[in-house]
Image (cartoon, rainbow, N blue to C red; front, side, top):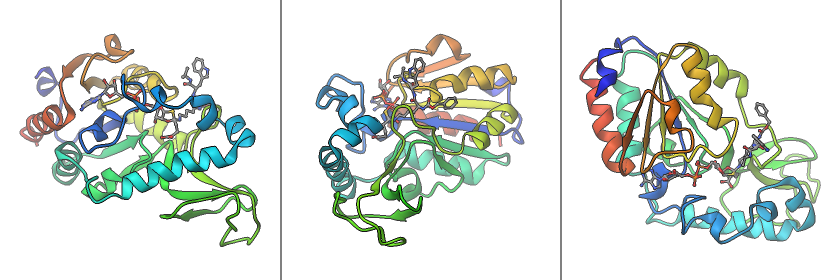
Amino acid sequence: MQFTTQLKPTDSIVILTGAGISKESGLDTFRCADGIWAKVDLEDVATPEGFQRNPALVHQFYNDRRRGLLAPAIQPNPAHAALVELERNWPGEVLIVTQNIDDLHERAGSQNLIHMHGELRKVFCAHCRTVEHWNGDLSVHDICPTCTRKGGMRPDVVWFGEMPYQMERIYRALGACDLFVSIGTSGNVYPAAGFVAEARSAGAYTVELNLEPSLGATQFAESIHGPATEVVPAFVKDLLALA
Ligand code: BJW
């Protein structure tokens, strides 16, 4: 691994994760041949306009995914676990920025974590802007537990055209990190797809861990290709050998 010559144990690390890290836990990616966007039109289920046109369809899409996430078979995999090991044992700061709305990072034990595209197990009331934990199905008839108004409840996820969460904190971390690692993301969706350039221009060493080269693969100093459950634990082991 080339990165071992570049890093000190006190360095800060930002890790971006995408759907590929949860694939081997049994959750679909978006843009693989059998992925979510091969089955539903993203304009219908992942835009504010789609939600306005047909909220029941959007609720059904996220209800199905929430039920799927809560199925006993869906558990964090060795890639999620390796990132917990890294956070616990690396002397410098480790921040995970995930595009995933599943909760497999936190179930594995990750603590310093940002869900930039929201969380499937949370809902948001457009009337009072309160976020609530939510494990059941959601419908247009649900009443907000905080303001008691009807018709404003939606999944707390970030759709196309909406601003992802905690961008200020993310850009601050990218500007200060020494190592940026991108795991299991195709590099199709901005602003996440631009993080590698941001980290690079701030002087960070950049590594991609993905099943195949992503759209932005040439921007990384180093690329390691393979399934996340294999390449992430091996990468973390090499990194922790420096600590
Ligand atoms: C494995 C593996 C294994 C498989 N091991 N790897 C024109 C130009 C540029 C930008 C825009 C534009 N027009 C519009 C935009 C902006 C737009 C955008 O990016 N559009 C593009 C499609 C062009 N972005 C937005 O609107 C965002 N907001 C925004 O930009 O606000 C303004 C702003 C301005 C300035 C600063 C900041 C903000 C919002 C984007 C919201 C995305 N929402 C979704 C759905 C909601 C959540 C949900 O339902 O789950 O988020 S879309 C979907 O894509 C989801 C994901 O988080 C996101 C990324 O997908 P990801 O994770 O990369 O998955 P895949 O499937 O694409 O890739 C998986 C990868 O894993 C593959 O490479 C596989 O090979 C690999 N893999 N198995 C390792 N076992």
